[in-house]
Length: 192
Ligand SMILES: Cc1cc2nc3c(=O)[nH]c(=O)nc-3n(C[C@H](O)[C@H](O)[C@H](O)COP(=O)(O)O)c2cc1C
Picture 1 (cartoon, helix red, strand yellow):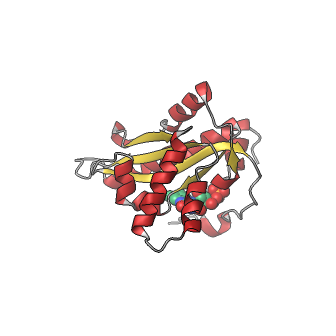
Picture 2 (cartoon, rainbow, N blue to C red; picture 1 turned 90 degrees about the horizontal axis):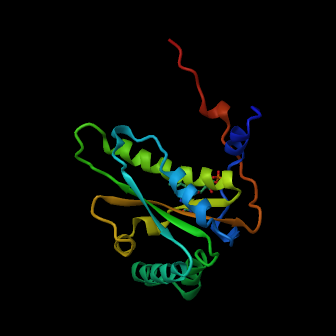
Picture 3 (tube, helix red, strand yellow; picture 1 turned 30 degrees about the vertical axis):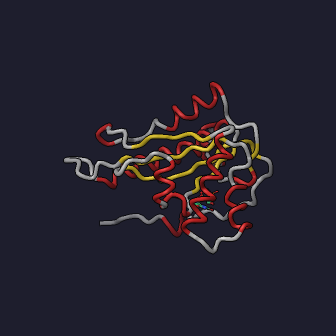
């Protein structure tokens, strides 16, 4: 394993489920740096096909309440426990960042796929930045990312898609280790 600190941080990265996060969340200069770093992504054509919406502090509980209302509308059979579970996801006080892909589907040169991938890199950079700063983070989508009422709640336009809801906070409890992809199964060499 290469011994550079950067490579060590990248190799260490793992998701920390939102339920295992707690306060303090990144704040002040650290929060600014994390958000700025997230935008340092490959971006074909420099379209900046992404934007971020933060949800933090007292807004977390209000957002969670709205989400529960959206869920109750789309799933009338959802019981109180299910709605509470949805709210609980935002009860940790962490920094939540909604990553929005802004896709120009009719762009003359840059295919929509490449714009979406650039936005995905923004979400991943949030995970990497969190790891480098000593926080835990998780990339979530779930039903909320595809729900029109949630899109309206966040003020998304017609060409915008919610591709990630990233939670970043201090680690309350270490997550159970997960199996990593096996390079031998995923990497092959092309030969002529
Ligand atoms: C686009 C995308 C959406 C995801 N949405 C969810 C989700 O809604 N719920 C969930 O439990 N994990 C979701 N995950 C997976 C976790 O973020 C995480 O990658 C997974 O638990 C593996 O953990 P690791 O990052 O430590 O390998 C999503 C991942 C991606 C890339």
